[in-house]
Image (cartoon, rainbow, N blue to C red; front, side, top):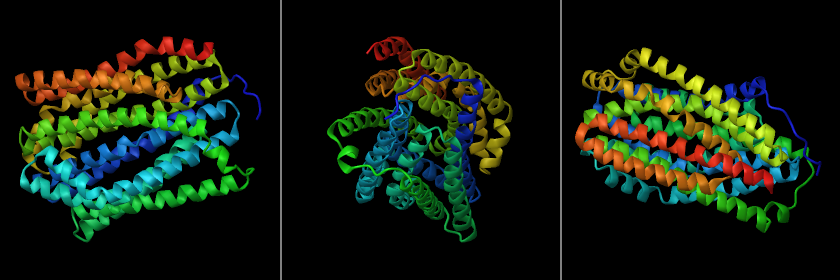
Length: 441
């Protein structure tokens, strides 16, 4: 193992990682917009609401396993900073085994997951029927989807943003093509969208594993006892447990938001579904910089380079807030036109435009949370991520029921902003103390 050396982070280096990763992540909400647009052409608000509800349950399940990407990124980046190539590969194989086994478990439990999601959301019968059809097909893709998380996590940890962009374009491009052809051309509707998603995940997994096998074949062999050694597996399991709780609570907030919207009627649920796509687009813009933060912060931790770590925090904060401001302005300026492009249902369009300002400013209120998440994930400070998420969720629930009763759907959106703000501030309050402890060891 080569001894780690300090390194310098520049704006150019940060942007070289953040821009391709942002473009890669942006294909995901674009995918959601296309799916919504395909169903929107059918002119049935119940189908649109059912797709949204099913996608939320699917996201809860898959985001719960988000540690397979973010946790892998942080651990690989730390090994990369420490110049430990063997550990980099070992982290990937640990994540791969967890992804494959977790994916198979999701497939087996798919009927129960679908039934629970339908019971929890408690939507109207036509919405529930569309939701059930979508989820039962979509969950079959779990093994491929979770393995893709591990693959992308490895490449991001190594700083290979271009490969991440290629794989995401392949995944979502294939998904869009099959969804449009199956959903509209063949008339399969919401089932065609679900099958298209399965095709996209499978193609991307095959491509990613082919690239990795090609790289690993040229490297020295790694022993199984090193890959699955007790210390490494314990660290991965502890990180996974904390991140799983964090991810589950995070998605739980969005599920609760969706459920409370459903209680206000199908039109409100459909309008919120349209606007949540704008929130997701804003989040994926910020996620590109958060991913760059994960890699650079983790690398600095591995290299034991405190000045570089602090510079990463400063640079990503500046760029993150600047981008968030730009995104908010763009959504506010062009959101009404985009709403009209997504859905043909006049009542849904009218209601979505009414609540558009709440979605437009989500990027600004969430900027600090995304940046701090990147820092803490890169450094593998998972316990703090878990604890602050629980605190933020408690604040969200209090705001949701208090504001929701007083102001209806406006109150639901206000509570979502409270959730974002508390997440960012709580992590920032801990960051300096955790950094001092980490570099003092």
